[in-house]
Length: 432
Ligand SMILES: NC(=O)c1ccc[n+]([C@@H]2O[C@H](COP(=O)([O-])OP(=O)(O)OC[C@H]3O[C@@H](n4cnc5c(N)ncnc54)[C@H](O)[C@@H]3O)[C@@H](O)[C@H]2O)c1
Image 1 (cartoon, rainbow, N blue to C red):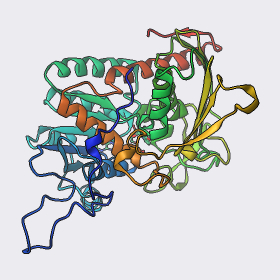
Image 2 (cartoon, rainbow, N blue to C red):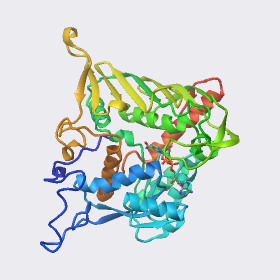
Image 3 (cartoon, helix red, strand yellow):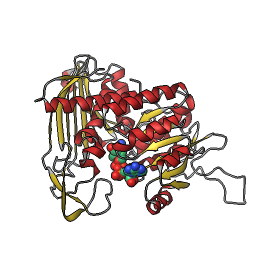
Image 4 (cartoon, protein in one colour):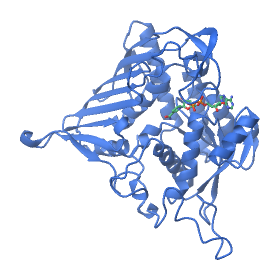
């Protein structure tokens, strides 16, 4: 597992700001021509075609739109085409998010010669089919998490990505929480040995949008669409983040899962992000877990614990991770994402203790291209950083992380958690 990708010194764009001010030129007719916003003259374009235009579609659009305006990229992302099944809705999404054209069938998108990269922002049931077709058609691929809905699909995707790499095509999974400056800083501190030998990795990812039993049966509650419930949705993120920060992969787990509400009203209209309204009467069965709690082992001997739930009343998007090592500890809370807590265990006990690092300095990961110290970033910036890192990897022809192989391992952990939970929490080994 690699180091966080640090922005280059050269990426501090003189005068450029996040909303594009400073990259625009003089008024029309009064000076030399300027490049369209977000592109740079002389840089080859990277023409993106995105499938899905709702929650992640909006977040990824923001990433592609902004990355080239903030960072000095070797290729200029171009929002070439967006794809959805409803022609009117996808046109509206294109207009809102700044895409140049639309498609209503992802196969048509992939067949286009003017698309270099396919960005998959659909539910898990279509990830494998779209990614395999895109790789076969010679495209680079960014695929949202979890990589797939089963280990078999993920194996096929990782195999195809490995072969595509030989042809110069790259594939990456959208585990965006690696791209919070504070988590990237935490990774470099662990890799630098500041925690020493790791003993514990403790992670929770808590949401509460299912507490109401009348919340409708959206795709996230149907196994055939989502693969699994809180496990694949939230658990996949914390498995990846734990492994990324620890610098090693889990070798086994012991798990409990539960579905607290087994029947819910069908959705009565459009689903927006995590919100939806119920139909009057019809109901359907919930076929995924509502919560997953599991422990795990790392090959180094470190122990890990995980909790993923959508029933943590009052908790909105509480991803918290703490690592304890022989020399020190680190703690991160996504709801305070500009901060990292660090305890240096080497300091004399009299004045040792956790201290808050405000991760907004120009020498922190990604931050030399953003705002002055103390002017914090948020959730959406992780998607800008994701786009930035992928563009660099493509321009340099090197494997981006997390790779499809990393996504496959997460998928194996998810499967092992389900297997363990079905077998009374028996410890279930995972091939590393
Ligand atoms: N990285 C993160 O933080 C994060 C957050 C939320 C969701 N996700 C992941 O992103 C993916 C999408 O989730 P979402 O929250 O954006 O879902 P969503 O329901 O908000 O959007 C899904 C989109 O996919 C479209 N779609 C579905 N099937 C399609 C098909 N066959 N062809 C074309 N379009 C299709 C829908 O019309 C919709 O536009 C999932 O894999 C999810 O796990 C990641």
